[in-house]
Length: 542
Image (cartoon, rainbow, N blue to C red):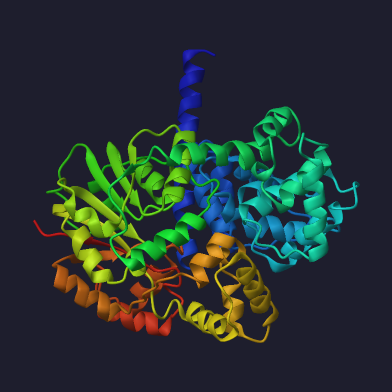
């Protein structure tokens, strides 16, 4: 290609990117106004113009997650869904609804290649499809005509959910018999069936079985169910400890997460354009003055990092960042460390310890993240105060707390559980889930079944059986901020800015959207606005 043609091609590429960026911005505006179909159409055109832009793929997943489809699906959309399932910028869980709706509309859902690609990397949260997974798993116990690729995908799904599905006594006996025949390996069908009921690392000689399966259709199962769990056991012993649990409540929380590390995530968005702390704060809250934020390396603390999803996201989000990530549960930290190593990251230091004891740390941090942890303390304000002391003057905190109104359905479900006497055991959680699914005339229990956490063992335990949970109202948070001397900067929204757009239209006199009294009124009228939790940023004065 001559120089003239190269310049013309570059100019055309720049023009396409410019048009694509405008379309993506238009899609974001439409989504904030709940105009989902036009938003999706704009993003499809953006991806056709500039398919190499990672952020467009993440935005595509964010929009398409609202859609149910029936076949035949438009060829362009089908091709984009296929690519999105493989794209590093896409959390496959976002594609759950469009993919499963297509599969369920077919005579044999397990013949759908999109579904078979989704099942290993996400958690199914559709009761009808789960029933089909359970039925196909049960059929495979005695019927060797079940397709091996479908059985492998089902086994992945069952492992992802930590075998939360009910099983009959007959199934249990049949699986035990299969296990006895697999001492020295066994045929692929039998191994896949076993993996759909029990993790392969529970078999004697599992390391030898992993080697045997390395070049078979079950290689991915051997990786997930043997190699990775054994690696986590190895990593757990090498994690530095900052001390034991500081209270009986902390010890109980630790025991819960040692038994059920949470969340057991598989893939998440891993393509990010890292930016300095000041730039990210400015993007989130344009009216905040960040001129005095220090330039250079950013030191971050993630308190209650769990299995590392937040810590990894933060380490990728902030340019020139190093992260100290702390959690009570060594099992959770081993999971986090394995995932971090898989991603080739080297800027996170994982430590086991109680955040109530972190005030012994000598260093101070530019940002302290405490999302989803303070509300599990015996005294959340005491923990928050200890963490606030670790923030540099002029530094930031990102806080996540449960909302009393947003958790209404969960509170109702916990009352239902107490009344029925379900226990936080594997069988107790299974019985509880069955009872909630059967209560079709209870809209609050039905709302619980729409939560992703309802569909895994560790998720359900965290959602409904947690040993310690506090919930907050916005006036309480206002009082806490005053007591701690922290300035509220604003909320982050998981709903693509829909709540922010509605708030602006109602409270035009609050352009910074920082009046928590207004937000309290807004939440009373929109009790699901913070159904996940309040996620917000605060700043420590200079």
